[in-house]
Amino acid sequence: MFLNFLINMSNILFSVIVPTYNRESFIVKTIQSLLSQTYLNFELIIIDDGSTDNTEQVVKKIQDKRIKYYKKKNAERGAARNYGTNKAKGGYIIFLDSDDLLYSKYLEEANSFIKKIDLKIFFINYLKLKSSLLYYSS
Image (cartoon, rainbow, N blue to C red; front, side, top):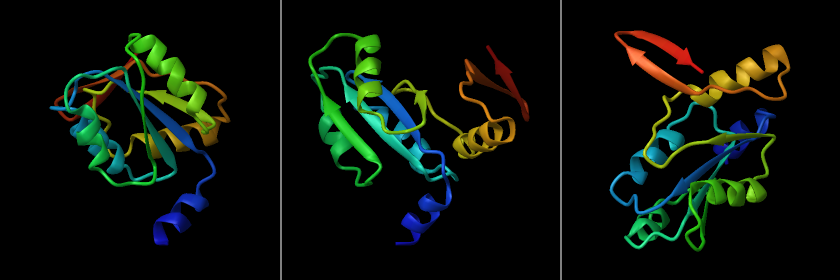
């Protein structure tokens, strides 16, 4: 109930699309990095691109109403991203590989940045951590 209240307070819904293929050994870390976000108004769309390992079982063990899991025939990462985009309900789409992690305030900071500048599109290629400084690169 409290989670619903916090989600409804935020008006930007992010759709985070994660294509995956045979990542049973890492995808839980990726999912946990999303579930640990300080900004809660997001949906996590996992597109299993024909995995032959236990990726499906690993993902389905994690119970969170924001997670949507779809399995499709293997057609490579680009096709999986397009499939996820068609399922997305959010106003902003974030592509995340299934072996990547987000720091806990990523969505909160993206939300603040978008609202402050009233952006329709923005792009960050990757984040490098060096010492205690954050570097954005594109």
